[in-house]
Image (cartoon, rainbow, N blue to C red; front, side):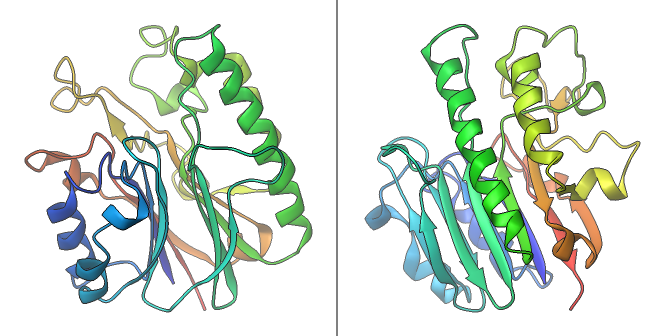
Length: 256
């Protein structure tokens, strides 16, 4: 099973790119989407189904929104994280065969020191609690999405230039490690310990052409999933298309 995660930064604006990706000969069996920026009725379900995928969608008008696309019909497990009610559509969880997958879109948190940064850290604490519960199920689980955390200096083009960004703050990185150290495997870093693996390039200042990127889209695997990890890669080509998302997909392959 190949599982990809991709922040499309508006499914309407990126519909043609998404459909091309789904129709490709080597398209993943599962695609986790983030930042849909539409309510569920605005999601291009007929076109996605015509491309051979079922869709679970948690949308939100103009902001956020996550989806799980799968060739095999998925069973919805959870819409939103446990805990306090959250009006922001940032988490969707389903079961596909013997694998549990989640599409998540963590808060950005900028500017640092304000309410958005506090919300980011509170959301990550809720995510950590739920991740621990999932880990305890002792099943193959893949937590994929835009985590909005750049874990180390290897994951950013220039740590000093980006030092003020919420994605690099010590608190953000500590929140990420709290989850990782429960026993999850960072799929890309496990197979590519020395490769930058950027998944995001800002639209400004020629970031893409200068390869000024960050690795903030991650696939975390439970031990039962990690032992099946066969491959993981970043599909950089989509970032180079006309009118692209500022993110590009990253995928992992799990052996049967």
